[in-house]
Image (cartoon, rainbow, N blue to C red; front, side, top):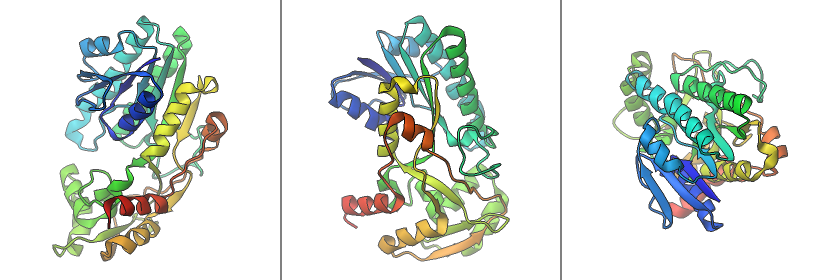
Length: 321
């Protein structure tokens, strides 16, 4: 089988490609960066580049559209819509024209209102009310995928990824995702880049120039709480969705059902980092939710294997800390 993987140089895409190659599939990577694994055909280009999409789609049987531009910087919004909305449309058009047999779309838990869910755990029937431009681009992508399924009979699968991390990122304050989530100074730098002055002003008094963990509460006093999923579990779910006939036409949450509170996560990290922690109430709503993985477990037949505590232990073992 010849499979196109978009975003194949990324964290999840790289793992998915490794699994596909290991079982003998041909793999094409469409990304702004090459995937260096032996046997991969790289097409370097943007998702909204029709020429690059056409070259990448040549002879492809199935598409795993995992790539996206993710940003919370206001100035990046036009680029994000070009990559995530226009790009998804071009890929769907090319897949239809070339008769690709399956199109798997990586959406996001940000299509839900993660700061104010109507009920928990969030299942696939929960209203989709994104509160970020990124979440909106993903919801628009879902709508296009479902339109192509209805209008043209395309075999499609939509996977809503939860917050996803490589285990190694959890101990790295410089990590794009984990740094601002778990560490004070990276959170200050991130919020400065977003222009969130009120959040920066709440955090700044706790910064004495040394690294610290950050325990975040929302303006209502609630701790931040979310599912954090290992890239290995996400990649396994993507492969299962590609292979499963029962997945066709489904929308599924993909990720762990374990929603960990930020104070509990920091306590696990502190066993290894030995860093102090500060608790700060931020002038924003807390991200505080849990998702249901029941549909994906029933349809795909696999369960997440990596708890947050196991991820941290693995990071320690690999990093020698």
